[in-house]
Image (cartoon, rainbow, N blue to C red; front, side, top):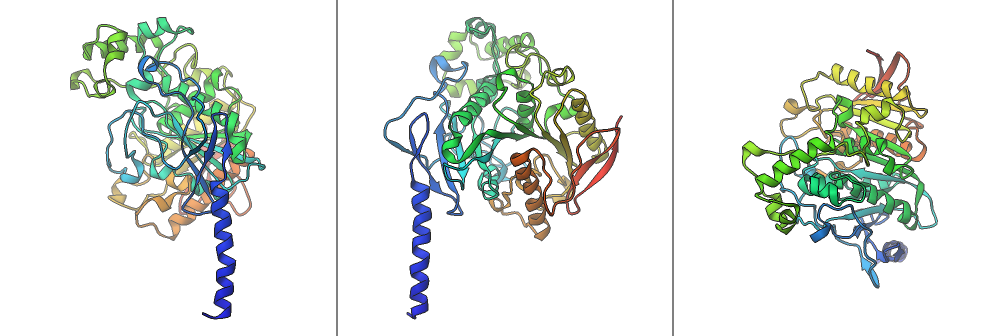
Length: 458
């Protein structure tokens, strides 16, 4: 071995060792001490499976989340927690395996994950991702939600699990009666608020700034972002918001608590449960088991009078929202039969309605790039296709990405990182993204060519 080679070895080993030691250094949270593990890039430290609430089991099934119990010693945060109760599907094209939840399921599922390159003394912007899945499936450990892509751009990234399906959104008269706030349903959204409260209380230990928290989500995650914007319970827990393909963009309104309670009684009848006690006595698997096709149920957020006091659109129209800078957008081939032009118009019109009662800016986008892979020509820029580009996680997929895909991912994730840092997505080297305001303003079209297009307000 030459002297030059020996010197190389001497230099490299201490660098790697220092990085690994930093990854293993304990972090103190309010629940106890944690150690993380190195990410794919050893400059990133990952903390997986951190409990942010008491397991919602037994009498806590269909109860608001309670703070997690403290643990003794040092907890090794090296594995994701179980997914919340749902049916695990390997793929459902155009959503291939990297878009789906995998692994075990359990009612004991309220865990979160943190990716960071920061030292505890730093105050990096925080990015909290809320998964989609129709409020019936999804997980904070889905591959394309991996936090490393944005952590390497300077953010402290958090993903988490929240209850879905009947476990997350069942309303029932007996649940309302036992509630000190006279409400039921929306437990999954209360989980989201609890996760944000955990971030507020603990993220500084991971080098994050609790005063610069961005919430972001897609589909049901986008609807969750909209609901948190409209909810008084989330006030002060976030400072920017990113809504990708959320329901308000299409004018979707949540049902009332009374309607949801009637649906809850119908669900109990389908499960042959005469009371709330009967429902709680069932196993999680019995609750989650499909019912006859003629008695299908859809569980989702409701206007419960507490967490959500009116529909999102009503709250925004009346100026009652948590007024924070917002990015909103959709994909060109999103759900529904709207053309890309109609989708672009709908997204922009929503931003204009918002601007009438908001003092903070909104930035609007349409993602128009067809993701390569199975039946790309058929599916185009499908619902969720924008996510791995925005989160900079193309590395989690084996699709045949080309240089243009990596260019779009670098550009889009730069916008997201800039926005999380300052409330403005613009930055050096990026095409200008105008604020959505005025009768003849512009919307950013993100794709092989990214530029702003004029839009006339209807």
